Image (cartoon, rainbow, N blue to C red; front, top):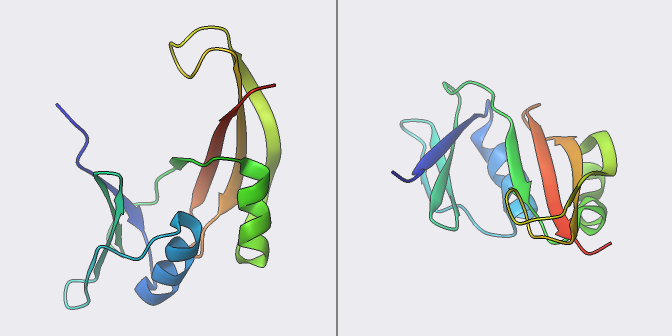
Length: 121
């Protein structure tokens, strides 16, 4: 069994499209205005932005949490500044020998989004 799609609440698809295009550094995969649906491809998993969807908590892997926040600038409200939450001694939940950095932001629709990076200490 594989994960196919994740849905996230979005009141304004244009505003959400603009935000997620910058965050994900890719254009939307598809948009269906008559149904109010917007899709992005997350390396084979669809991210659906939909006014009827509940708000979820997405954890998105980035190369560097600090650099991503710098790139996003005023587009986001930082709820939790970058911090190390765990050092991976083995490969069970992340690459061995790496620190797991996380920061939490609000997207354009008010949803909480986590940015996650695995970096050598």
